Length: 165
Image (tube, rainbow, N blue to C red; front, side):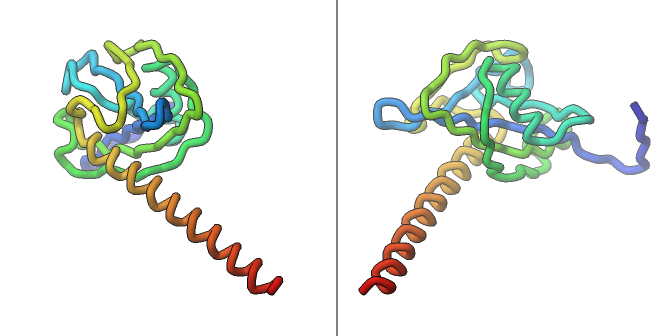
């Protein structure tokens, strides 16, 4: 592998996967309890540092699989989190993705996760890093998507009625 040397500092990049699944009429989110510092013992979304030869979606899928044992299908990019102090170790930029599961898969904690568990979205423990902000962004993204779907459906109905009346 080629080595790179730069005269200026540059950030590390991580990918986080926000896994969502409905059960009993409410949405659940998958969290892992961190085995290591920083935030040892705190709950967070599965995620971690990208490898030099992978893209962000591949890193999110790999981290989800390594930390929980489940595989994600389609991912939706939620955003990039760039606040300079978001990680106490170093300058880290995180790219967050959402994965939706129709049926909640069983999870097994592994790698640097001490525990993996599904939580109702409205009953979460305190989250590490800026993961609460990521979750708010996921909720807003899904709400906007639902509004768009309703708007598109209404538009189609209007077009159909206009053409056939």
